[in-house]
Amino acid sequence: MNARHDAAKPLLSFSQILNMNVGFLGIQFSFGLQQANMSPIYQMLGAEGKNLPLLWLAGPVTGLLVQPLIGALSDRTTHRWGRRTPFFLIGALLCSLGLLLMPFSPALWFAAGLLWMLDAANNVTMEPYRAYVSDRLREQQHASGFLTQASFTGLAQTLAYLTPSLLVGLGLNKDQLGANGIPVVTTLAFMIGALLSFSTVWWSVRRVPELPLSEEERARLQALPRGLGATLAEIWAAVRDMPSTMRRLWWMALFQWYGMMCYWIYIVPTLASTIYGTQDPHSAGFRDAVLLNGQVGGFYNAIAFVASFAMLPFTRRLGAKWVHAFALAAAALGLWMLPGIQGEAHKAWLFLPMVGVGLAWGSIMGNPYVLLAGSIPPERAGVYMGIFNMFIVIPMLIQMLTLPLIYDSWLGGRPEHVIRLAGVLLAAAALCVLAVKTERGAHA
Image (cartoon, rainbow, N blue to C red; front, top):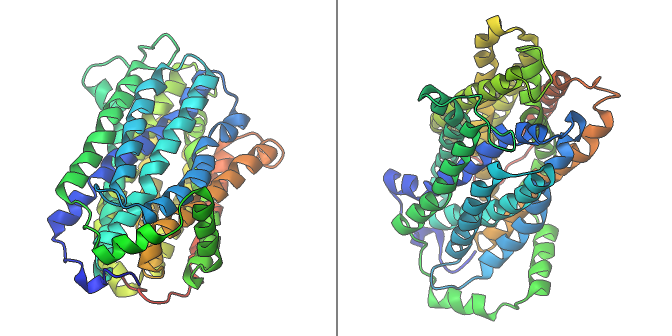
């Protein structure tokens, strides 16, 4: 336990908890834009369906390399702005630049390279932000902090998914294309994301700044060894000493994130096939599928936004693992149902399975972190949040490297079969989280 004892942290009001998480609106708007638009952007620039997972490698690889390092570095930082704040601001600024450039990509290789930059920037911001919430709140407020963060994830991604459709509703032509074949409404959505990325993070750090380090803490941090070698040694020591609750969360994370990547990468090709009867990325039906995905994706993120707050009393009463298992099971059922909805006349039924996906997404962004934050030593919050992100990115890497191998042979080259596979995997994740034995903070 570090010198700044949990009881010394001031209890924050609900409005302060909201303000400290506003930055997540910009971070997750960026992720929402990627989830909704990167597969269609890649296909519009010439990518083949079986190669889509490989083109998404930027996120998990940069997360695997960047987040543990940045988490460990932020644990040891003694900058006058705080331990975490410098990382928030640098990452958010680079993210804004990447979002501005992405829709103007002249070729597939350019878009793929920009995604590496964009995801690296997001990862510089992400785990210090989660550690900041753990730093700033007492343990009894962890559930409020992380589920509020999850609610901002739902709100941000709702807006990100819906922005192109809203722009069309305001009178823009959905078929107006840029010189590279990317719709103008997509370009405008990315420009809005660039504005939100930095401004929301700046709002949070100004409204709810980090707690100042005590002289004892500052002396302890300054006495720690510096350099890359010391940082890597700290990461290895943290892995070696990993709490048992965190170790047990691995199997849940493996199935959960493999399944979610299957959904995000193949939902637009699935909707193009099942609703509009096309796989041609240059057809009007495919562009309609992109907009439809924005609408159903916006809906499930709106469900996540509401569910994150609604889950709070259930998480406190029943425990995070039971609530998370229920949410994952609901998503598993929804994803199994989704490919069976076929034809444009029946597309309204797509919103039914999205209820389950929304419940799961709201829970994914909150409840596992409630379980985690209650089991890790606070002086190592940054490095453990970074390591926990490896539980996200390693399954993503496994998915991206293995799915192309089975796409044609096992799944018949059909994107809708990938969606059903995602449902099976989320059901497995629900069973795995029930096997997690919590230590302290089980109901936090």
